[in-house]
Length: 222
Image (cartoon, rainbow, N blue to C red; front, top):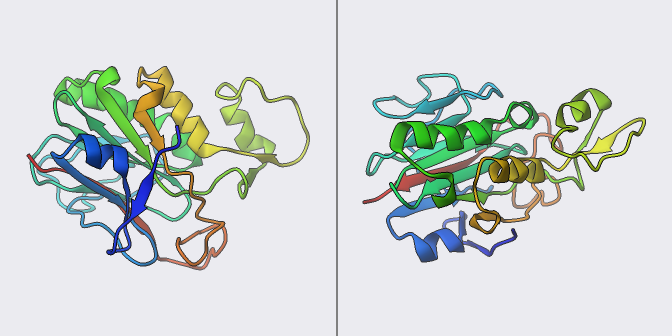
């Protein structure tokens, strides 16, 4: 569902539902103006690999999602159109940061992150909240049939068509979260499109020559 996200003076977007309900965490979604602090990220490879961040050094391993329950251990992902998703478990205070490009989304990386929170820390899907940050939206994202076919099971309402199809990656990930047991009203989507707002966000599709990325991170504070 859509939720209010506010832009801080540091240039970072934050989900109000996270901050109002869970004072034991801090999180943020970066912009051109600023990024939240993060201690551990991965060498992202557009995979469905989820890694426990315990004892990891920054960018030590390949993968596209991190989980942890350590206090004061900030984990993050880098994006410039792909979907950044931050998860928190209200029952055991575990957190996750997910980088979901089309390949990772097709492979179900966010569902694997939910599973990893359960396997590593005992999280129940019904206690998990998800915040979806700025990313490319269907208004700006067209894909060919080869890519679209990998999402057909998530969008059974699609009718056969030739040529390009608009792909809604945030919606694909929301459907996977719900299928994993996360409650629909526990999913918060900022609704912002990186490709539509060049003054605010980096977009690889709009500017393929750019190397800058935005960071989305989350940290358990207590």
